[in-house]
Image (cartoon, rainbow over all chains, first blue to last red; front, top):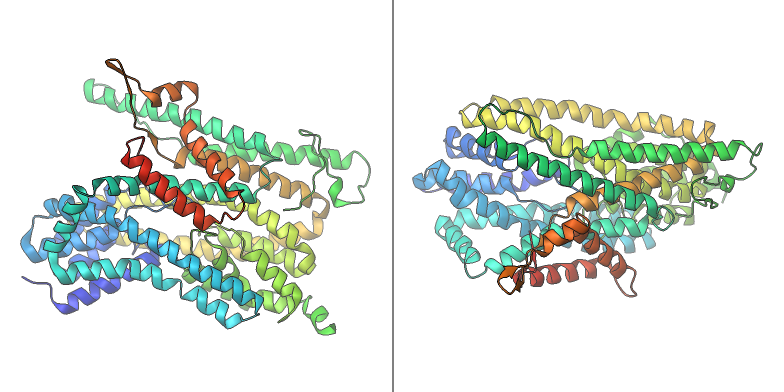
Length: 300
Length: 273
């Protein structure tokens, strides 16, 4: 059974929609399990779609988009795996390993391309601001949807139109001769958030507050190591000792944020206390900070 | 210009909030880019309101627009909280408030990004994703719709927070004028602290290279861990921070350099994921 043109059209449109949904309204129509469901409906085998989508959903559980980091695109992987699984008659379990996972990790690259492409529109908006060209600002902003949607639509369309043979060939080639490049891109993807953090640090008054940077990093580094090790230990023990049960979670970031909040609150209270001691400060800039003993000016 | 003076007293209406909320829900991240991330999105959301506050073609408007296309990246579930506080300030104090606005944006984006990511990018998808996935594997699509339903509730919450933050922002401006700088300072402390935490958790690479000392391989990563865990991510972030301070260095260039160096170091087997 072949994939007919209207199925290709609908799946391509969905591939474009799902990334925008995930970016903006977030209705969960951009989740892997939804992708499996909708592809199953379009292809006429909801069960296979749900099985593939559900499995992919479990694979990426907890993999959020943190700080603008790219992540594997389980949705496009699910769409293609379901489509080919139903069309060729491949077992769904097999399609997950053979198509869904490799395609999902390949799509990190098109995600990165889209994020690069939008830099171009951001620069055009810089120029539009100089010219007070309001409609152009809106236009150049809205055009940013194009790279996003195309980054998913093009690969999904090409794969569906040219068939599973091409997909497996490309994936095989990338897994053998070009493995170094694939691994390298994965490492680069893991390091790229560091650029975002460095930009953020350039923007924040980091020289003034560097003790808090050191504290935030060190506390989290130590705690996350402990949590990870306990998790490894607990999971390992559960496999060996039968009566041993217990829940082992990873480090909750909210707890870290609360420590940071506490520190910020202390500094806030201290500077308020300093503010109130000399009766009636005339200027805003007179809020001296107790901890660091320096005059604060909010120049940022 | 007498006209622009008049416009400085523009007061936001419910129609304004609706417009911002619509843009936020449907279009906030369309312009996401590597260089300044959600910067154009932030401007797009409030551009009509900025034009009403400052008046078209005024130098104040240009200054405001330039302030808002600086680096910005936070959770798209909490972004309008920052927008609300910002607009309260700008509406009351005009272009004079822009320095404070930039400080508040920088201070709040980090914490809200961390809390928003923990809650909405990790926790909610984990809970509802598990439910939906488990039901789906058994051939039942109900879980998919439960997740959609949960997200509709979250959308309501996203819609409500703008006006709430705006009102709180107005209170902030009127009753807490003296405490503003202390508050801005506390917000930036939280921001800096959280970036430290993000560096320690979100850059997941390690040293893959194990040189042989005679017949014994030297586990460099383990040696580094004994010194200080996560020292490699800290080093990477430090080097990029230093690099960004160099002349003629743009963030786009930095990204390309990081990309190429990462692939090279990975191909040589020095760094692995």
